[in-house]
Image (cartoon, rainbow, N blue to C red):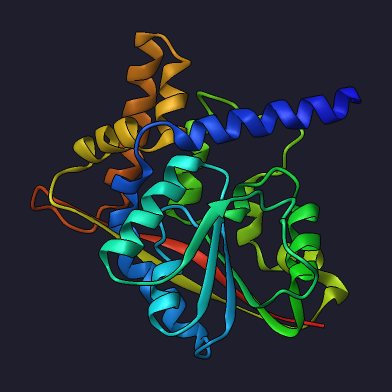
Length: 272
């Protein structure tokens, strides 16, 4: 095995461990409404074969299945897959969930009528592989839909604040580049016959102030938990203060609760 292959495998292992840390299911509950809205705007036809990539705990797979689609969800984190299966069963929705990598999907060419991902595949380290796999498993004329945080929105600012304390892996494109329309169009290129992009908002609403929101993410959101774990006490306090400042800056209410709008780019592409 080449050193490059070993490096990417090690990176993937770290990414998997990061997303399995904490309990993303707790965080996911706060964006259920945005996921329902995203799927609703796609107008997925009943009985369509849908692949949800980096499906997490099922926020997008479950409403797609409820709308009548035949849904398969994949994610690199086995604990999230287990939660997705449990959620689907509890809600009486039929969907298949299995471990899978956005850069190496284990499905035949043209297997799906639609490939979707919300705040998921954008974190894969090799976007060119993601594009190639999306185009491969989506049938000609099928739809590829993504929801990606924008570089200049609230979440992009949050990522920058964290990166100032805990730099991301070298040589890996910033995930939020998936939220830049020009970059998205360049990446898909001639693989799609049509592509439309629109800016949407994900509403983050918490019944407590920004300081407690940061603590919530520190405890349950894997990337934030892992970032804090690499720092000593003094640097942890500095990171917490900077993250809290971002939440306070964007908080639209002053009643002791938190309401923030997180901008994302909604991408709809037709497979050529």
